[in-house]
Image (cartoon, rainbow, N blue to C red; front, side):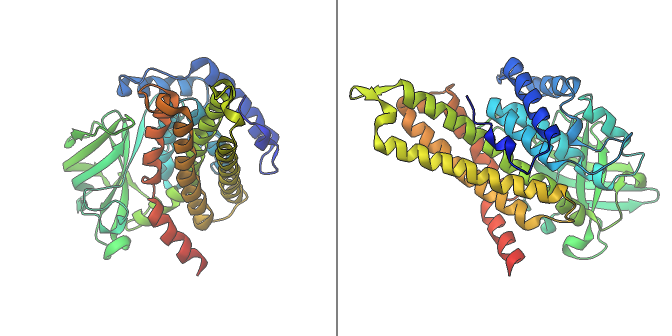
Length: 379
């Protein structure tokens, strides 16, 4: 039985506990899903999560506007990740893809949110480029003003939901100033002429990923999110909200790895006694439990701080993301080791966790970049 005692921590209100219980019950009945066709699986997951009401926290409620609840976002990602990594992915991209629209969009742009929250439209966040991943300010893609329109030209890559999304939040250089101050954000529907899927990207934990080509993609000036030159600020504001949720997904993976390890150690015999009786195994399990609890404290501190009205949680979110993802990798590695040969057998849960966790230490700010962010925040 997974440890649920953390829900009694003072970071949470009763509504968060009720939400976590309801979602966990839904997951137990509906997850995991078949991953053999990730496009179909993700479309189905978005539709089913939306129908069940679990996508509501991902975006602004236009009928009752208010700030995004980061604690609910984190609890949802942790719970989904513990049951099925692809379900976590489907949920997370709905939030990341519409984050800029929730925080900075016009009422017209925010009309998309009712559809994404209901699971009737899939969103994506198009920031990374072949030459600029961690160095966002170095992007090459341009958006040139032409009368009442902007014309977008260039490429985006490593775009989650690329190829299945209905709308993309796209960042491009509009040239108001050099570097980060000359970038703007745009809402681009997937069926806009000139927007093409140039390549589907296959990774160790299969998810819908693509490289996108923008071949003179023309969008109206009203497609700009926020003001000209505000794109970098918008992107960082979105990541400020969602970065701690990456740590929460890693925490979900780590909790599942610990649960599987406890089951293995209790039921597997070695030298005439349960595996758990070996002191070395006990030491590994103690380290795993310590890493899980420490990660949870950092994650929910960051989420609580943001929900309490802090304008930025750059330091807290970076710490949560860095620690949780790096330590989850170690927790899962120990789980693989304790499972022995089964731990590397394709299709085993700890083998899939081993593949799922690695990308989280790269996307939305690689671990080494998070260290730079933290150092700059405390100098």
